[in-house]
Image 1: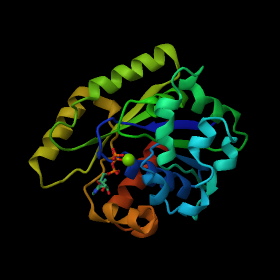
Image 2 (image 1 turned 45 degrees about the vertical axis):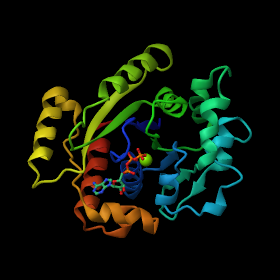
Image 3 (image 1 turned 180 degrees about the horizontal axis):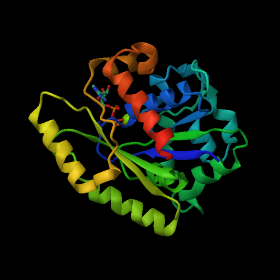
Image 4 (image 1 turned 135 degrees about the horizontal axis):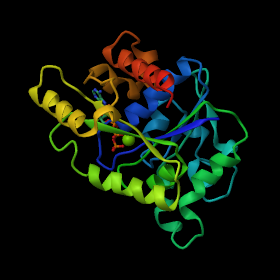
Length: 255
Ligand SMILES: Nc1ncnc2c1ncn2[C@@H]1O[C@H](COP(=O)(O)OP(=O)(O)OP(=O)(O)O)[C@@H](O)[C@H]1O
Ligand SMILES: [Mg+2]
């Protein structure tokens, strides 16, 4: 049985894509067969994992979501063993309005994943910074939600909306959905605020917070422009060690 994990937070720039790419690559490095689904029309996971733009223009997640092609036809192998990707680009904006009035519009992704005959240990879905149709589809398809929280002021702002959306999705679309964990990102050891945010989040959410904390690390911000996950860009960096540790926590913790 595969485990489907969506990485969501409607707040922008909190580390969703960085986590989706680097968690996927770290799971693949641990020889877990992994599929990274780029659920964001910004296409940052697609380019960040090094997918050739020309390879998916005609068929990508959007075309599978609207039913023009089977999902297996839009899966691309990456240069990383055990890691495949479902790419996206601005086409995906279409589903936010083209889906209005369609039947089971929130379950399109779930149905695509159910019909997938290839075997993956983990499916990781990168969500856009909104609680729109794509995020609802991702939540409806997932077993677990991981919420990256940036260790900055207002980190927990809007978290109530997200958790409420999860409650609604659980009640109406997907009773299986569980909070897999909250991930503290961009933690700056020397910044008092980082420590304060981290303490607050742990006080509120206790053991729902990953033990692994992702440090602010310039190597992590550099690697997407090279189309490489951090473990291929700089395996010795603190960012690489942190995402490998997170993957270990997920594999050993039984997520
Ligand atoms: N731990 C980190 N250390 C340093 N820079 C980081 C770290 N994590 C993410 N960044 C940088 O912060 C920016 C936002 O990160 P990212 O794109 O992962 O966030 P996001 O939540 O996916 O954003 P969006 O909401 O736009 O999809 C990027 O430039 C990224 O390279
Ligand atoms: Mg993103």
